[in-house]
Structure formats: structure tokens, C-alpha cells
Length: 580
Image (cartoon, rainbow, N blue to C red):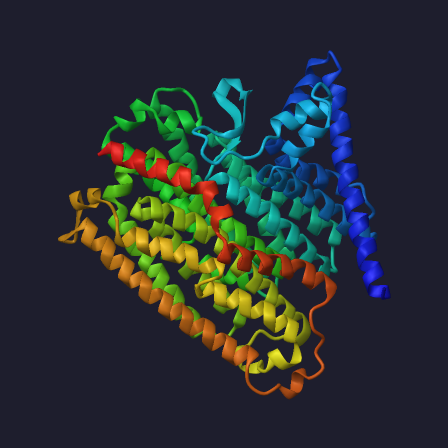
């Protein structure tokens, strides 16, 4: 065995041991709480026995732990950061694949571990409520509760967040300056993102939403490119602007609902909220719509995105495209349409128009970009437009396609940003005209690039195909309720078909700019300047190969992913129909 392979195995073993130590320490603490009569420690036990709570807060504990490590020990900082990032992935993957159910069959039922494994049951996608539901009073005077849980919408996004966070953490090993501060902020960001997808109380949701905003601002502003401060401030101001309106909408919902609660579940079914004056409901809807559309971003709120992507360090671009943008689309499906389904219909024609403009505009602007990273950034505007169009269709296929496209975009575009980073690390240029023939120079890199690029254009047999296919199918075959909507003199069902046809043209434009990019960057004669460039290194393999594997596997066999959210999509579509 070569020295390089021995070093790699040694590193893998070291990280596995570190993760085991972290889990063991947490289990010991919880076990101590179980045997103690102290109510505070007992509450600690119950709190962290829930797998969602443990997944959310381990990265926060990791950020605190890194504060006590010497800033000069870069290897130790990277190792511990990766370990704390891997814990949520191990827990969530086990919930998906049933690892903990198998462990529960082995351990003693009456033991602490056996009791914990009974809570960590395999995720049930067709459960009408929320898996791993946890509810506790938090701030009594404000009627705020700590409520978390996962269903068919949040579980795949929670799992994807944990997965991409680990790969982006591995990609972050290339960070050389202020390593300690970087990984502390990174772990805070990971915890905040996981909290957003699990929160079921609006106040808690807002707290996690803002927690994910602050670290991203510093990660771009300190470790970004030449115009990093401009990009960071622009990102912060746009997102904060939307957050203020979201907070106003949350307060209005609390005041008008009559339930005196910030619970998403109670407010979504509140008769007082449904019977409130249309003007007030439009204001509440508008506040959420603005916050989520900026985050997506939907045209014309997209202008912060290209600057943030281009100036952010490569791992943070991956997080931004793979996870943060999905928080906006998640808000549409968690808040807007379950709580205001009637307004979703009456305003759907307008939102759908913005979605198809995003699809076409993003694709056309991407087509003329000279900078490879900016091309990928504008492609995100186009792909996120597909997601919003699927949600606007309010059909089961549209909802299924939107969630599928969230995952596909997170994997495919995340991989493309990592690949752009690989090129830039070697050539110190992102200009497409300066590249060429990299398939000859870097054949292994080229193989992964082809997989990510072809998935992005929606090639059948890769994951990117299924989301776009279901979105166009769901939009074109929208249900009969759309006939009640007349927009610009056009019946709603006919308008949805027009939107579907325009979106299909967007796929053609996507294929054009992706294939043009591949031709200019990968094909042709080997560029004399890049002869002898090294192919991918170990760190890059670990960050890119897992994504490529899932792009191909879920493209050939999407059933394991789709069965997570089919029940949710059908239930949400039926809820909308009941309103009419």
C-alpha cells in the first residue's frame, strides 16, 4: 500500500474515532441526566434524546469547543470541525436507512441506549404528523415555544443539509488564513440551517433564520474575493430587508389568529386567521413572500446572488447554492401555501410569471457570462425559477417536482461550484476564454464535471431530469380549480399551460449554455498554459465523488428519495382543494 493511501486511511480512522468520542460524550451526559433527580439535568436528558435536537445543537457545541483550541493547530481545528459536522449526517442518515432500528434490536430494551434507540425510529414518510416531534415551553410571557419535527418536506432537506455541510467542510480544508474563526462561523452556520428546516414555531424559525444570516455575512466578507465586502453587505442588506417584513407578518399572524401561539401547526389551521380581513391577510402573505423570494432568489430580487456567489470562497458558494437558497423555497411550502392557500391561487398567476421570467432571464444571462463562476451563479436563478413554478402549480406533481429539484439543484450546482474552485486553485482564472482542453489535462476532473453539468441541463438518467419533468408535467396538467382564476383575460388553467411551455423552452436554453461551457472549458486542444496541471487531489475526491455517486444513483433510481415526500405533496394539494 502506498504512503498516500496509508495517510488517507489514517485520516479516515482519526475522524471516525473523533465522531465516536463526540457521540459517546453526549450519550454519557444524557445517561447521567437519566439517573439524576436534578430536574435541570433531566430536562437536558429528554432534550438531547431527540435526534433532531441533537443534530441541530452538536454544531453549536462544536463552535464552542473550537474556541478552546490553539489557533495555530490547523489540523486539529479541521478535524474537530469535520467531526462535529459529521454527527448530524450520521444521525439523520441512520434515521433514513434504519440503522438505529437495527441497533435497537441488539441492545437491551431497558438500557439507556435501548430507550434512546426507540425514539430514533426510522423516518415514516406517510405519517400525518411530524416525526421526532418535540415541544416544550420556551418564553412563556411571549407565548413562544420550542417546537421541532420533521415531515416529508423537511426531512429530505434536513438530510441534504447535513450531507452537503460535510462535503463543504472537507472542501474548506483549503482555507489557510484565520482557520479557527472560519470553522467556528461555519459550524454556527450549519446549526442555523438545520434549525430552519426543523422549526415548527415561527419565533424559533425566525431565530434560526437570522442565525444562518450572520455567519454567512462574515464568511463572505472575510474569506471572499477582491469585492468581498461589497458582496457581503449587499447579501446582508437584501436578506435583512426581507427578514424585517417576515417578522412583521409573524407578529400580525399572532395578533389576528386568536390562538395566542406562534406554532406553525396551529396557525396554519386557525379559523381566526382564515376569516381575517383580506387586506390584513394580503399584508401577511406579502411579508412572507418578500422574505422568501429574496432568499430564493426570484426575479427581480436576485441581484445580490451573483455578487455573493462570485466573491464567496468555494465551500461557502456550495452552501449558498446547495442549502441557503432552498430555505426560501422551503418557506413557500411550509408557510405561504399551507397557511394562505386561497391567496396562493389568486396571486399564483403573478408569482408564476415571476418564476418563468427567472427561468428564461437566468438562462439567457448565464449564456453570455465570460466568468465560469458567474455562469453557474445565474444558472441558479433559472433553476430556482423552476422550483417556484412547481409550487405555484399547486398540484401533487408540481410539489413533488419542486422538492426533487431542490435536492437536484443542491447536489448538481454544489458540485459545479466545487469544480470551479478546483479550476481556480490551479489556474487562478475563471475566464472561460482562458480555459480549454482540460479533459486531456485533468481526465478525472472532467469525468465529474460531465456528470454535474449534464445533470444541471436535465439529462435523463441523472437526478436533474426528474424535478424539471415533474414540474412541467404538474404545471401543464394543473387541476380544474385554476379555471376559477382569470389573469390578464386568460383562464388560469390555460395560463399554467403557457407557463409550462415557456419553462420547457428554458430547458433548451439551459442545455445551450451548459454545452457551450463544456465545449469551451473541457474540449478542444490542450491549452499550452495548462499542460502538466495536477488532477484532483484527495480532499477534492472526498468532496466531489459522493455527490457524483448520488447524482447518478438517484437519477437511475429516484424512488428512495421520492417516497419521502410523495405523501406530503398529495396532502398539501388536497388541503388546497378543500378551500375551494
